Length: 110
Image 1 (tube, helix red, strand yellow):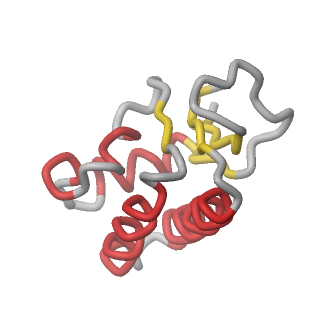
Image 2: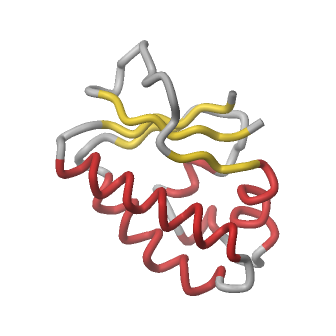
């Protein structure tokens, strides 16, 4: 089971891309949001949308710059976990590319 990130044309898109462009495995997600000792909920207003592994989240092109900034701030605090760094680095790239294309990033648990 994973929290999958899909890039779509608009926030109300009902059809997800066939394959996710990024996946947060449950253990990686748990480490980032609960195990790294960082108060994501209070510190990162946009990333906290992803705090519930089983709930959907979305980022429109106008919020993706803020998401990228939060990821860049968070990454140095996660260096003890290579999988978390790799996943967030990929997610950052997805957000940058989606922003450049005027797309939305949707996350859902499969």
